[in-house]
Image (cartoon, rainbow, N blue to C red; front, side, top):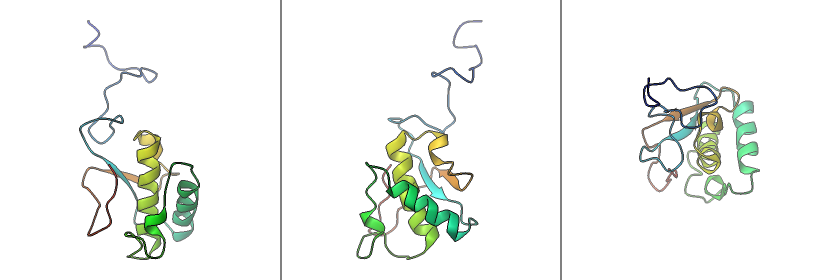
Length: 117
């Protein structure tokens, strides 16, 4: 069996990832959003965690920002979680958020609110 035919090992950095689990720089765009069924306390924690990272700029979900409306926890958490996911390498574990994140291939951007890919 040649290298191309061998199954990927858990620690193999060259493991092939499914289309919703791409490596940064891939041509397939994916986004991280909050699971809508998540309670508000967990979502607010995700916003605080994500926006607390150095390279994550959450100004867009603040009052007057392009993603402030709709002003609800799911919307704000989705935007912040996606910023963290994009900045951290777009690995599945960068969107876990204790089981409250969801990787999607449909762009969640709307109106002037543009989610980075």
